[in-house]
Length: 270
Image 1 (cartoon, rainbow, N blue to C red):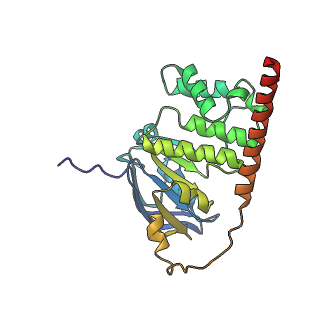
Image 2 (image 1 turned 90 degrees about the vertical axis):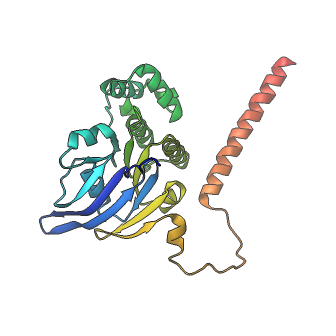
């Protein structure tokens, strides 16, 4: 039998303090290759600190961490070649257009056909119509989608997404979710930090909850649900959520527009 591959990410005993403030108090977890791992926690729990250590932007005070088989402390250059990071704020060049941003990153990664790659990512993230505009004219949601598209350039084996859908509208958020799922299907390992519980529920193969610098629970969604008492079966009238209303309204609007367009075409033919 072939030897089992080591996990894409291995974290053991990670500790970090800033003067008198202790942020991480011995964090342990593993992320299997090709899986989506969600790190949940409230503001100040230490999620971003974990990501910064794993992406070699910050040194831990104690503990060990390996990404794609490389030690983040002693093999930082190898780790950086293996990862892509999308932080909480969009890191895009506002002077360039969206397409030029993507082409620039493709060339920096020495990828073939950078223009083709840029056009494919613009289409994937619904930015084709605005690809030639300067990023300084983009809305916050558009910048975020462009930033995530840039992070997917070159299909790195490990991707860190630090609260990737903050500021996105519901449609854009679902587009990002689908993109993340497709990445995992192609074998990319995704570590996702989020405050949106629904996001973790939709995407993650495994979920860890980070609280006051420690992992207090780790498992699949089914395993985490077993921590609570069994659900009682009761009749409850289910009201549509705001998300249900939102998509019903915009989909009806699209259908109405399609009907008008169809009628207009028919009248011209007559």
